Image 1 (tube, rainbow, N blue to C red):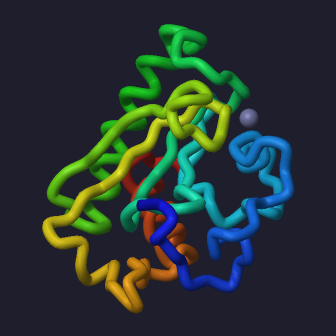
Image 2: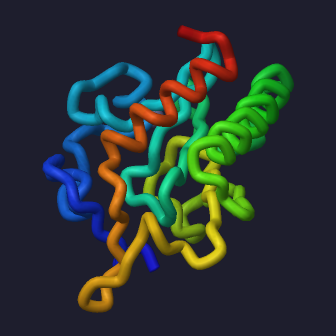
Length: 166
Ligand SMILES: [Zn+2]
């Protein structure tokens, strides 16, 4: 399904053709590399939350540790607890922003899982009753209508409101 997604945006990487020219895109976000500056929506001492480069649905988020690890078994217990908190905050943020009717949550881990980024990341995919309004079908391709920059600004603001993190 991912191949059918196109994001109308001026950023070349968001057209689904050119990945940002960085060794690890998630480490690049953590390091505030300007090539990926429009993806981050929230950050704590241990984790960063970003928009997915190729969103499956509007508001599709990735939560990942600030350190480069590739397997869930490498997470420390303090990270696991914090990750759970961030997961719950993300549900709340997305509910306020988009009123989804459900979520798909999970990991792709390992080379045969479909993971395109080795750096461990948790997908939060909001689901909508008909996935209309944000997405439309034009010429057989599903188009995300909301500009990712608008999505980013909206979500950054709600994360700040909910966490008191300015
Ligand atoms: Zn990394």
